[in-house]
Image: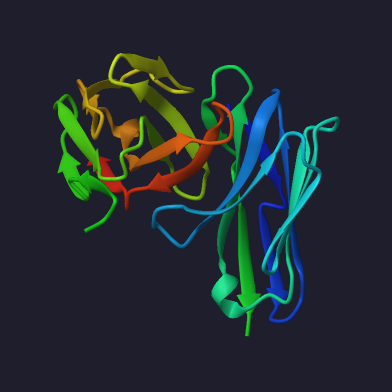
Amino acid sequence: SQQGEEDPQALSIQEGENATMNCSYKTSINNLQWYRQNSGRGLVHLILIRSNEREKHSGRLRVTLDTSKKSSSLLITASRAADTASYFCATDALITHDMRFGAGTRLTVKP
Amino acid sequence: DADVTQTPRNRITKTGKRIMLECSQTKGHDRMYWYRQDPGLGLQLIYYSFDVKDINKGEISDGYSVSRQAQAKFSLSLESAIPNQTALYFCATSDKGWGQNTGELFFGEGSRLTVL
């Protein structure tokens, strides 16, 4: 079973709008990371948030982490057509350090 | 050259055949991973290795085996391939981040395997 579940499974917005994706996970973690995947390509790291952090920013990305609810969100502001991709969260498990991924959110940004 | 290289990039084989997917990295990372991705789905962890002598099963290790020949090389084998192992396979590497925690993963471009 997947460690994380992402919501929504698919999201379609217009350029300039904000996109919010949510991730829930099951076990205790050291950190949570977000990745982007263009169709069929390798994943690219976007941002890492440690378990003792609540919010982190990187450019147009804002990530939050709520360890009490075992959930995270990724906000992409002022989206562009080039942001069209699948986005995945991944968790670094507390003891074993294995990295497990959620099912992902497919984001489509219409020009 | 890519930091994480997977070979072959595409392979078509028949049920029952033995298949090896290879991964090599030039990043000097100790940690390496093999994932499987089915169409429209996320990645499932098959095996991971923190050094040559430390290999661990992931979520879906049945039907797969691995070999860590050197720090830079991590191979995935399907001893007797079956059609439901048709998928896109990714290798990834990472360094230790803050503390002993996992840092950013760096991915290869994937190996697309079709089992007929």
